[in-house]
Image 1 (cartoon, helix red, strand yellow):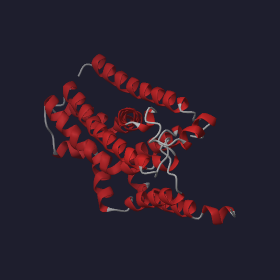
Image 2 (cartoon, one colour):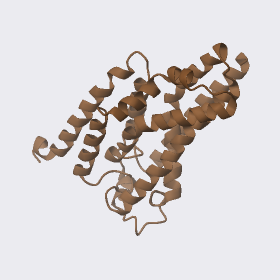
Image 3 (cartoon, rainbow, N blue to C red):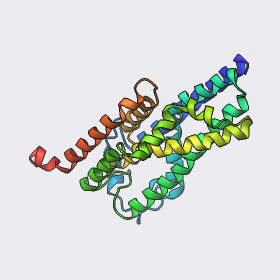
Length: 262
């Protein structure tokens, strides 16, 4: 892979991430949220809307919701792909990796997250019209928020999390054991890696229903954690501590009226 083409691919990759974050910022502020996800008067009015009576609103329709989640997947998950793409790039020198294969891995990986975006947008539609979350995607009940925090916290200790994280944490080992050549081979490997990544990180996405799916502060922190998870030096050391923090957060949310004296 010639240096000029390699640089162009990486430039395009990071440009896509930047564009996705800019679009998410515009969407978030357009719904009356600040950088910490706090709604202004317009945002508060949206939270009080009845989705059954406001079907013209984007957040009450599947198409706009799916587009929002797809954009969020690009903004949050593409940065986590850097170790995987770097591992494949290393195999361009020592094995039969190609630029077409590199693109195949990228497309396959992101295709799985697009499928997940469609799934979670469908879940949000059900929750919205069931009265579980409001128009900003925020859980209406602290018990729902606490249950979700607890579920994701406990998931950090499961065998499924361990297996999925093991593949995401060591993409080079996956490539060495499952190598396929060319664009089609890269696409197949990307689809498999993407499915493991969805299995590893779905909980961070689902936690958007605790503080709002358009909360840029949550998006930034979740992205940072998922990037750190994939670093060889520390990735395996932060999984269970995060689980403990999420369980404590669940207890705090459930007991907040007692804690605050309200």
